[in-house]
Length: 138
Image (tube, rainbow, N blue to C red; front, side):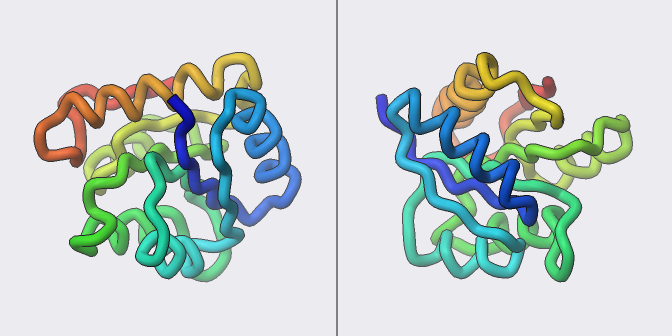
């Protein structure tokens, strides 16, 4: 199945690597470089998953996550944090805020798609399409 993915990261190099990796798997990839843009983009378009960085200027990933979760048109989209923050407090904060999964940078280009696909499948299995009982943490 071809997934529609929205990648949100302020680092162009990360977006480029993620895009290239996911497009090799047939994904349609859109990009945003800030938390502010992801909210407006997600309201207009429908993604199967959002890969969201935490540390961004302006609206950070936690704020963008809260905005997406609080909007009736975007609240059912699985959101996986894709970040260099690997401490347990950051992971717990993201899960508590509604993240469906948590992936850490640096990431393996060989594992990114299967990990993302597992997050989407787990979210689809959840009848509410919100936070799953056991988020995928890598």
